Amino acid sequence: GISLLETDAEGGSLFRWRAVSGVLGHVAGGSTPRNNSACGLCLDARAHILVSHPERCFTYMQDTGVPFNEALVVPFASGTTWEGTLWIVTHEEQPFDREHLRIANALAQAYIDQSLEFRFTASKAAAEWLEEQLAEQRKKVEASEMALQKYREQGDAVALEDRQNVVVQRFAELNAAQTRARTERIEKEAQYK
Image (cartoon, rainbow, N blue to C red; front, side, top):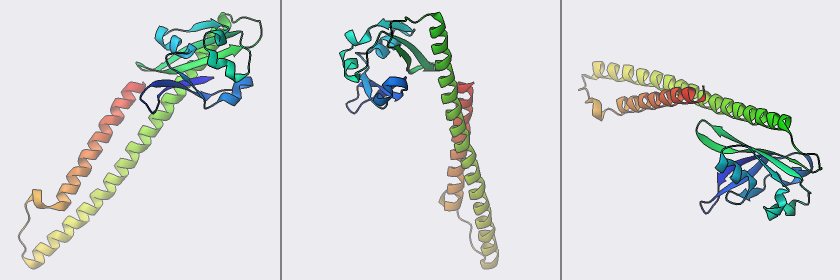
């Protein structure tokens, strides 16, 4: 299973079981407390842990109706932020070995890589959309400025100061939004590389 660290309605921390398969598939979407769980111990240690008969320490696990022999819990982080754990449980008397740990670590890394790719893709799409909107607004500003200039020439009108000109102000706001979006994109690209 995969448990992600979340904040509950009261501001406390919990782990949400986001992906669960096998005989524990029925608990997907459930949660465990941050401060009373194998996942919490794992994040506190910032290292994998192996717990024998975890339901003895964490009695809420008895509510699953599934017997546990061992739980192998591996933490994962995105950059410097610890996000959750990947856990594998065995219901038989066969203990976990180093190969199980290697596979669990590889799965956790694959989850991190996929999560980062999704975030990067979403950020890139948002930046591209903002750039398209900015280009569209620039065209509108140019058309408005041309119409204003034509009106000035025909009506011998007096030009407005820049700070009073709504069109110029809107253009400046859009330009600032584009700059912020580009900066955020560059920061996220640097963070996810």
